[in-house]
Each structure stands twice: as C-alpha cells, then as structure tokens.
Amino acid sequence: MGKRQPIPARIADEVLFRNRNVCCICHQPGVQIHHINGKHSDNALSNLAILCTNHHDEASAARRLTKNLRPALVRKYKLNWESRVALEQEALKRKSWKVPRDSYQIRFEIKKTVFSLSTVNDKKEVDRLLDYLYNWHLLEGQRRCILENLESIHWVLNGDQISQIAARLYQFFWEYVGPKTVSMDKSGENDLARAFDLLSGFGLHVALFDTRTDVIKKVVGAIVDFLEISIFYNRTRLVTKGLRVAKEFRKHLTEHVERKADLLKYCRIVDSGLSRIQNLKKKRNAGSLEQSNVWR
Image 1 (spheres, one colour):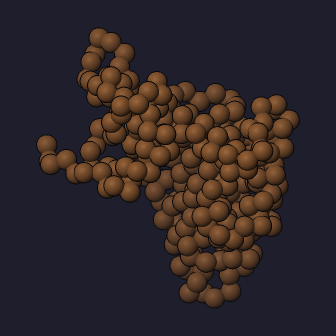
Image 2: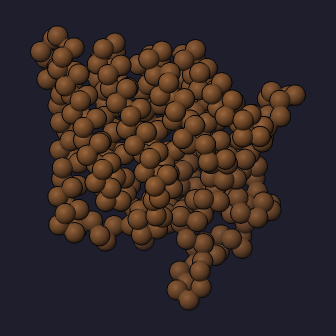
Image 3: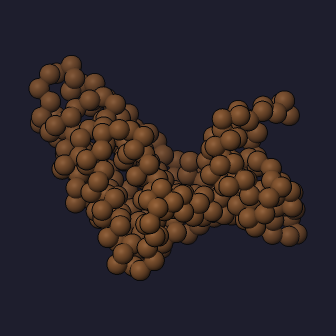
C-alpha cells in the first residue's frame, strides 16, 4: 500500500464546516475524516465523510457476518446531514426566513429559486442556488418539481447557466450507484426521462444561441451521464430516448452552425460521446458489465 497522502487543509476545513464538526450519523463530536471509497488518495469532497471514532471503525471494518457501514450507506448519511446543515445555514442568512415544511410552500420556494437562476450571472451564486435545490431534493424528494421548473425556464437561460446546470444535473440522481446496490422504480425512470427532455431543450437552445465548445461539451457530457445510468440499469426505453436526444443535438448543430470548421469540431464532440455509449452498450450486451456495481 502506498503512503497515505494528507488531506489538504482547505478541503479538511470545508468538509468539517459542512458537517458542523460532528459525525454525520450520530451528530456527536470527536470525529475523523473517512474516505468513503477506501482510496486515501481521493480527497474529493464527495468522497469524504465526517464520522465519530466508533462509526469510523465500523465503516472501515471488513466484516462479513455483520452488516457494517457500507460506502453507499455512509454516502447517504453524509448527503442527508450536509443538506440539513446547508438549509439551516441558508435560513440563518435570511434571518427571519423559516425553512418551509408544507408541500405547497416547498414547491413555491423551489420555483422561486429556479426562476432566480436566470437572473444570476455570477458562477458562485449559480452554484449556491443549485446546492440549495439539491438539498431540497435530498430532504424532501423534490427532484421532479426541480426538473419541471428547470424545463420551463431553459429558454431564458444563457450558455454559462446552461453549462453549470448540465454539469450538476447528474447529482440529482446520485442514488443510482448501480442496480446491485439500489433498484430503480417507475418514478425514477420517469425522472430520468424528464432529465433527457430538459437536455433536449438545452441542446436546441445552445445550437441556436450559444455554440461555444465548453457549453457543448457540458451538455453532451450530461447526456452521456444519463445514458450510462440507463445502460447500467438496462432501461431500453431510456437508452433509446437518450440516443435520440444526442442525435437531435447533432442535427440542430448541423442546421444552425455555418462555419464548417466549427461544425466539424462540435460534431466530433457529440460523436465521441455516442461512441462511448455504443461501446458501453456492446459490453452490456456481452455481459461484461455484470461484475460492475457502480455506474461511475
């Protein structure tokens, strides 16, 4: 085993702050930073959980006869606790604002937040709003409401906003780490289909108004993300829909990009994503994906 790399101080401070310096499971002090996937060189915030010594020992143990804290379960505790902390911090920022609990109030708060995305050009502020929406998804299961509202405003977004949303969209489907770990019900399928609809709208918008390489890469990357989930979960209807969205995006680019050099560059981006998906489909059909337990 290689030498363990220390966690950079700024990352350690950030993950401790997001958890209020307490265990994300029992909310007790006296904590350690745990690498969820077991790779001590992976110091991404998404891979770091704050655990007390007892829960850290349990998460690190390789016991077969007892149900220890598996990575997927630790991740759920982490996301649930961090989202609660974030919402309470947001409430403190707004001073007199109270976290809504009524379903109508929650949906209104989500709609108001989504619509405010179109008025914000600062990237950090867009990320903050997306974090806020993500927390509502985690706490109240409002993914569908978020997707519906995003779909209703995509025409008033600019390329930078679309790029940031597309890059973060897969996070709203974090639970689908693999069919061997988490199943996907009809509601999940419908939400994935709606995500493809949203990306279809993004593709047309970008082809018409903002054909920048970085924006196109983000939209194609998001389509590929959801196609990968669909393939790993063997959802033929969703795979067909996602491939159609990618091909329609390519068609829109062909119809609206005038410079041949730019068109060739953009089409290569789409074709590269489609090639990756075709290879994944072949592996799935050959049964070589069966040993994989996670899609990312």
